Length: 586
Ligand SMILES: Cc1ncc(C[n+]2csc(CCOP(=O)(O)OP(=O)(O)O)c2C)c(N)n1
Ligand SMILES: [Mg+2]
Image (cartoon, rainbow, N blue to C red; front, side, top):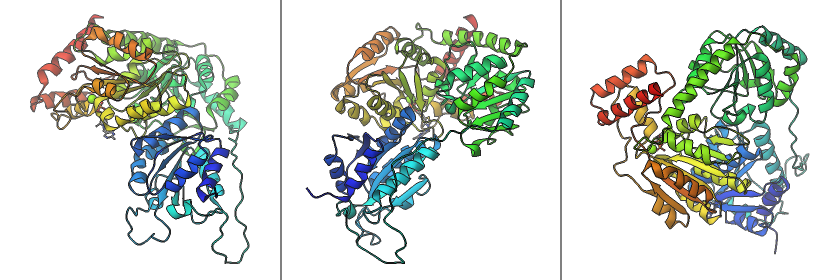
């Protein structure tokens, strides 16, 4: 069989160690599909039902493995469908390569069918973005694309005209110019450089931290993999550890130094520690919600990307470097603090917070409390389970009631905060780690957006476990509307859907749960099932994801929305009162 130009692309991906491509074919990429078919012993193609899912899968794969995630879509609509997942990768700094088809070179510019100039569409999302013009440099274009994605932790895009995909790889159709350059040759290699800050900066940082009386260590996604260094630094500095949500897996939740998350989904002790600290050590975080950051504290910030340092706080010492290496260099310079009362107070606060959270997890509450559902998942999931969460109230329940312990991991679309990422993430992570328990915790709204990806799990024998927190509403927005003082609008689905029979009809395990007593057996059975499983849990739609501290403005908003005719005020009031009573009487 005569070799075709698309094989140059596929062979180079293989040389880079790419073993999985997520995508969906179309007439704009038949040549690339043929290239993949010819090399299917080395690279597997996972067929999805929606290209957005392929992009989310590439993102989840990249986040969990650190390797480049690759997705493939056809010209026009296929490429357009990728966009949301690609922005997720860009905003969360995941290395992803998107490959798309383009109309034939003879048709380009003629308003041909499906003629969408994806190289222009992707201009904003992709740091490296190129349309293939001739076969010769294809391998080099792949090298540039992958190196950019890995080095800048971002998105690259290659679009490939359909006729060129099948072209003779040797053909050099045009000669000209001064002839001073050869067909490019480059190598499929990228080595992460060792980034460590200068010794003077480390000493300056240590001095500032050693002087601090009330230090907080604030850990983000960049601190994942540097857990023991984070704990050691915090121990020396007597500093409680506050985590961002994407940084949740950095250190265990039950550790005595850990206060959990921050922000609307966070814990009260975290918020108080941030308010009261005089010094903050930020590690691998670009947390955007600055209202939760200290106003007057002195700050040291560690980030592998120098241009992110100082983005959220006026920082006193910038340490550009990888979290693990930088902390390792910093720790010997830190003095063990004798004065530890700030930490002790935070730990006392944490004890009372944990009591409050445990009270909300009461199994006796009916309708089923989402906090209880999450606590059951937490109890039954393995110590190296991976939990993927969608955006919505589900993220609050996961943030507060799923504990990181052992080698657990936690992923969500954090900066784009997109719905519907969790099932594709879980599928991709399951494909990367076949023996690991991969769970998706989703709302009924987010699940419905890409529910066909449960079919992808069944078809590809990916034994993911999907738990639907079914409140019949776009719950997060319902509460936001009320906090703003607006009675709800367009946030409740008129019909309650039952996803369990549907999951069964796909060939998976499916169970519907309405009775609190059934939650634990259902989750247990789903986890024990050898294939993909779905648990559809009807939870209390009036359960509020309360901020850890309710501000005057939020409380005022609630009252106003009730006065303006909030439709379900009786039920909401009774849930709110009951939560408060459970909290107080615990
Ligand atoms: C793609 C997308 N569309 C809209 C939003 C805005 N949004 C954030 S959370 C949410 C509600 C999610 O509802 P559901 O998935 O049912 O979860 P719940 O909040 O009810 O737990 C919406 C609409 C978003 N983040 N992403
Ligand atoms: Mg919902």
